[in-house]
Length: 325
Image (tube, rainbow, N blue to C red; front, side, top):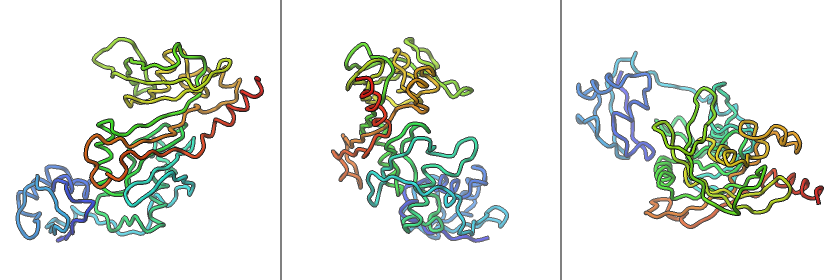
């Protein structure tokens, strides 16, 4: 079977072998490398190397047996079964910032749920005509960060491969600032502080353990907090993650004796029931782009700040405060 592929913008910059592995995931790496060596893969009519970086407009010709390539021909997509609810904080031709609701997962879980944040985004962009799966070889809109099912707030997604590459790099280099609002049970020892500890994840329980001692199995975590106000046994606080680890805010604040209100894993069920909170009071409410290096096609976002319109648990917090007063 001879197949021809024209490389688009979202595929450029990738190594030839890695592109083919994404394009044909059923093929083994050895099979792909052998095909490249045997000239069964040609770029612009010529033999190429596996490490060749693809360029927009490159013409690939693949000479593979029919049994090796299965081309999907369908207009039915799993993401179309996702829900329609999508709260958009900001959107342009490169990125989309969504305000994820509590209870919605960002990616498919062990139950293979279809109604996920990324599927809602794909559905939204597909219906707008901005995402056409049939015209894309490998790329699909993707999330650049994630938050827990029961945490709400801003999640960043990229609409094209270049934006995804830049955002992943900026997140890795700590050039994006994400701030959280939460309700703590108890009052931290200081009005503001930077906490340092060590976190280890238990894969079996999907929980983490915090320690004050470094080992070969745990990771350093740093959490900055600022108390906004306190009354009774509740504290409203702003959190700035200086490292980003699984359940970091929830576990770290619980470690100092101030678990999040509503947190069923690390908090107090007695206090959660007392105040009627079934999900952790935690919202990723603010995002700031703070580039220290060139931002490429996203340079226009530098120094910009985005914030959710509403923090859902704050109204309930205010009602509790008013009743107490």
